[in-house]
Image (cartoon, rainbow, N blue to C red):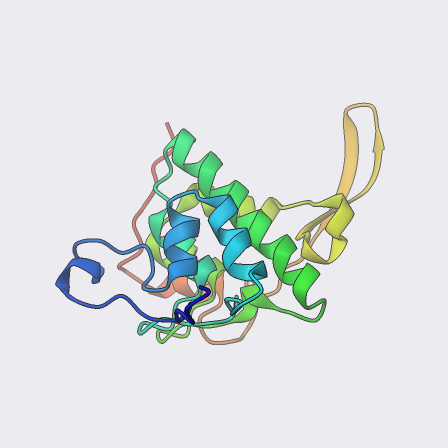
Length: 185
């Protein structure tokens, strides 16, 4: 970094393409997808060249898209991906309170939420839909209004879910035959 390394250089070659090894093409995405929170923080805070959270790779994916891509609905993987996803969202708000990282679309016009729907990543999708971070209320999609013992009421942000916009979550589920089907047992 001291020698002016480019923190936005994209990995290239067959190995780094989606078919073989895709953790995003950017150093920030690779650090996030391999659960290196300290490296993520360093890339975002270093005094030489700070990584931009909104940077997109050749597929238009941000670090959040890359995290959705590596999610695999296994318990340990989900725990790691969800924690990193939330830490990056918090960091984005810390860097720029007006940052709308989850609204960035990739080349397929998918946000991280709609990418999770299209690829059938159920656990990360559930987390995104039910995310409640009291200290960062702007990042919460679920807002608990009140609780009385086991009873509570919550409001949910339906942005990009139940809308008339192209590529809403419901549109993808209804019209995309490529979406993997999850069976309840």
